[in-house]
Structure formats: structure tokens, C-alpha cells
Length: 283
Ligand code: GDP
Image (cartoon, rainbow, N blue to C red; front, top):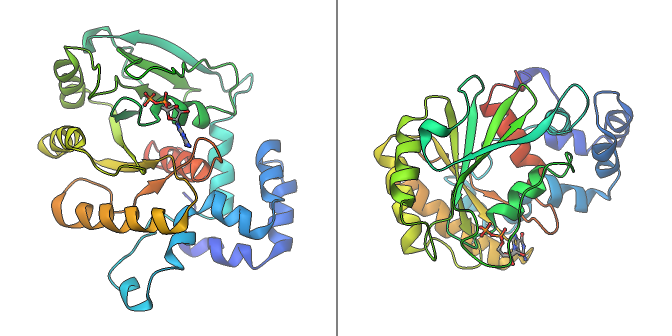
């Protein structure tokens, strides 16, 4: 990532329409992202920085100890990450294989990130949204819960691998715990685990099993809030509740939540940027 002192912060960029305009014309910006940059400022902010929307509704005294945005890249960094997620001749983004056992998983050459969550949390929809710049990648989104029974591996160019883990809870495969536990414990190239929580219902009992696994194995993990319904009140309530849980009850969880919507795409670009960053692709 660009050294913080050398780059324009997100806030300053927003105050400088000319810079945004130049960025949208730059060769280093994909066409899709250039169009995003032309959105009205309010809409652009909500799309790229969903937590900023929420922060504005916090009482000033609560802001002191609540550092909601720790990962706060500039739109330039977000544009660079979008490039990493854009399929081209030289940057092939493909489904690689599926596995039920770790010894059937593909090689360890690239850094890896994995996505886990309850069935129906919106995992396939999120992965599909992350890969929207690679339309050839087939991510199956099921109408029925419990669809993903294997670990599905996708490679993003030479950059990293994304793993879609089986959903837990309702209709989870019987060997779920063995499969997921072994993977989380033994996968040496695993850089970050993204644990999905449904923003409509918050953290459920079954989510605690996954949280406990991550804590026990001392894995760095991140909570992603899916199905961000855009209702500021609802999102604010969930963010505050889960943020408190993260701050007081966890050790390895990244202290920033990532609200996303696979419908409006809010938070998707930021999450791409975070993935690119933790896999060493923004250095
Ligand atoms: P999975 O079982 O975790 O892979 O969940 P899916 O991606 O199949 O999504 C489960 C259900 O939630 C489907 O009906 C989706 O259409 C819905 N869903 C997923 N993401 C979103 C979202 O961001 N917003 C809304 N409103 N619905 C979503």
C-alpha cells in the first residue's frame, strides 16, 4: 500500500473533484471503476466507505474510543485493488478445483484467503460480487441453503487464492467440523479468514463455533456483515453491538467490521482492497 504520508487521504480526495476526475481517466483505473468514480459524491461515499455513513450518526463522545475505520485506503488504492480483481489476458481469474480434504487442496504457492459463514448468510452472493470483474468465473448461488459442501478454490491471477468454505449450521455436511477445522489449523498459506455474519440477525450461536475455532488457532480473521440493508439505524445498531463484541471478547479479530451488500455493491470495493492488501498486493 502507498505510504500513508505520501498519499492523499480518502477525505481530501473527496474534497478535490479534479483529483477524482484525473483518477477516473488514469490508465491505472479500470473502466468499471472509472464509472464508479463519476457517481454523485454521497452515493460514492456510501458505496466505497459504508462505515463513514454510520459514523456520522454516532454521538461525538462515542467516537473517542470507537475507531470504526482503521483500514481507510484512498480511492487510488481501491482503484488499484479493483485492477487485481479484473480478469484480463495477463490476469486470469478462474475456478481451480473443489476439495473435501485438505490433502486434495491445490498448491500452496500463492497467499490464500477464505470465506466462512452459516448457510444462507450470503457467502456465494458475496463471492460472486467480489468476482464481478471476472464474469467468466462461475460461482454458484443457490436458492436452497446448504449448497456449498466442498471447499471451492478460485485463483486470482498470480496474486492469491480465494476459498469458498462449506456453510455451517442448517444442512451442513456431516464432516464440516473436520474439514474446516483441519483446513484452518493446517493451511500454511492462509493469510486471512473472512467470517460472514448476517446483518439482519447478528451473531448467532453457530457463528460462535467458527469464532472459537479462529480464536483457538490464533488466526487473523475479519467479520464481514452481509446483506447491508442500507437502513442506517439498523446498520448502526448491528455495527455497535458486534464492534463491542469484537473489542471485548476476541483476540484475533480485526477491529474493523466490513458491511457489504451483494445487491447495491456497497462495501465490495473496500473489501477487495483489504484482500489485496493482506495478500501483499498493494505494496
Ligand atoms: P450462502 O448460502 O451463504 O451462499 O448464501 P447465498 O449467497 O445463497 O444467499 C442467501 C440468500 O440471501 C439468497 O436469497 C440471496 O439472494 C440473499 N442475499 C445474499 N446477499 C444479499 C444481500 O447483500 N442483500 C440482500 N438483500 N439479500 C442477499
